[in-house]
Length: 165
Image (tube, rainbow, N blue to C red; front, side, top):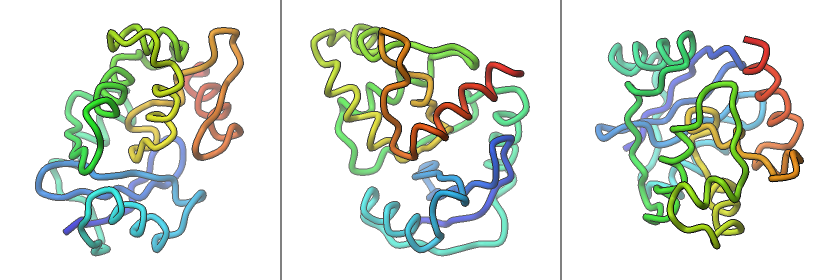
């Protein structure tokens, strides 16, 4: 069973889904409803959802550190029904420093699969860990922002907010 609670981040209020293994999803409350988020999380993990009033202290501490210090080392993810390729891409995204970017081709090279540029883009497009796994930091090699599952305006906002700090 996934538990869902709201969390106040520097980028807006977020839904955070988690189970006993780790975080199973995240989304900004301004971009999705609780019902839509629960359905997406259920599709990803195969388990239902239960709304709770607050996050467990251990998870809250890790998320608070992440939001203020930009340190994701305390965050533990449950990658659910994802492929090993998607996991490689998402784990590589975690290595992109706050305020920095990589191109899709650089990310493909980083996971030692330099010809998989389009597949990298596809894996980023289904990243269920919005902001927590910072796929917004991946851009085109020409500097174009590329795509973003939650909209290019949000990607631009996130990159500008990181640059400003």
